[in-house]
Length: 190
Image 1 (cartoon, one colour):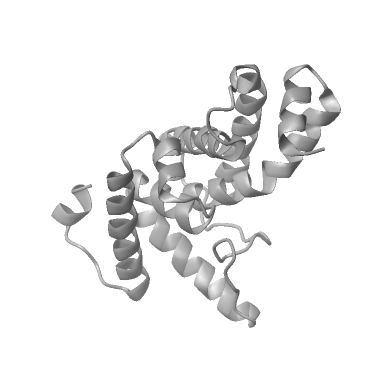
Image 2 (image 1 turned 90 degrees about the horizontal axis):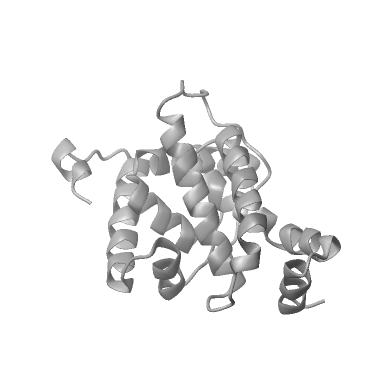
């Protein structure tokens, strides 16, 4: 079945179609949550919450946006909620390393496993230092592979703001990875 048929069947209560639809998007949703959350525990919680929210919201999905765009919006919101909850909990420690790709959609990955682990640690630390609005835009572009219009729709902001957040987020991420630090005043300015 194609995605449109799966959505229609799932909206009519077909559990097999719903399961197939969720499986189709689960890995990408988890990859976005993993990069936004910074660790597997919170990413898994956010992924689970996102999938539950998708199931609950599916009857109201009207098809004006692509299903994947809508699902990323749900996942981003679930992950940002998880990050707010995490702010009230102790930090779980160093991130766990699962087998999800380190590279953006369509990219190539390093051949040496040590390079992969090292790069992943650097990127995770750098992403953790970014304000949520920059991290969300960068992850949706560079991990999920969404275009600027889709990101604008997911985050409910103007496309120009998306471009700005991605540029500023990438710049801060590069600085964090290379060891350059911004001043506290620069970090507070979105």
